[in-house]
Length: 215
Image 1 (cartoon, rainbow, N blue to C red):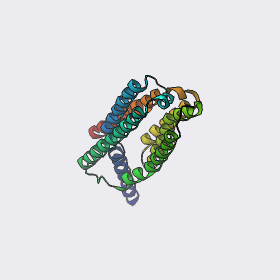
Image 2 (image 1 turned 90 degrees about the vertical axis):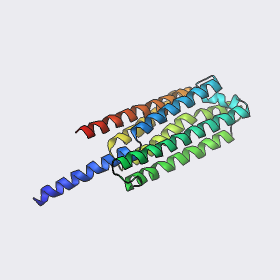
Image 3 (image 1 turned 135 degrees about the vertical axis):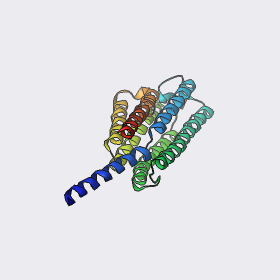
Image 4 (image 1 turned 180 degrees about the vertical axis):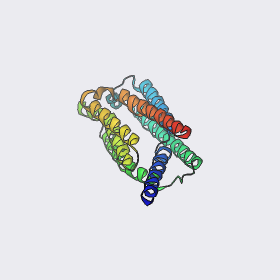
């Protein structure tokens, strides 16, 4: 009897952990909106650069380069804000504390990777010139963002279910392939990763949540 009770408690803890992860790490709707925001940023970037190659950024005027940086900074802030809003809403709806330990661990795991990507990106921009070497360095931006973000997501997923880890691995693999084979298509890589992968992830999360509610 005690063995059965212990097993039931473990199963209940697992269900709570899975539910907490789905609603506090990256809610499905927030992931979809984030993906759409990435597509908007890619569309505006293409209009600005007239190319999929991030290397063309160094050939733009300082004002256009500033616009590029501010635009993506704004998109990033909007994405984070809407994620926090949906995370809080969904967590409260499920009776979960928004600042629970799994949520904090996820945030702590992702933050270092994002900061590393930010510092390296800033360094590449500050050193950018019109030489071929500078152009080549800027081409590394998209794969760098993807692999750093993927590493953070994977690390955050170690405290949760498999789905976030799969998303992290997808970012790392896509970023590595982009770095080796498709460095001239940085904008397309961003659209496929931060855009499409987030949307697919969001749809899967929403579908799993609905199935869990119906079960």
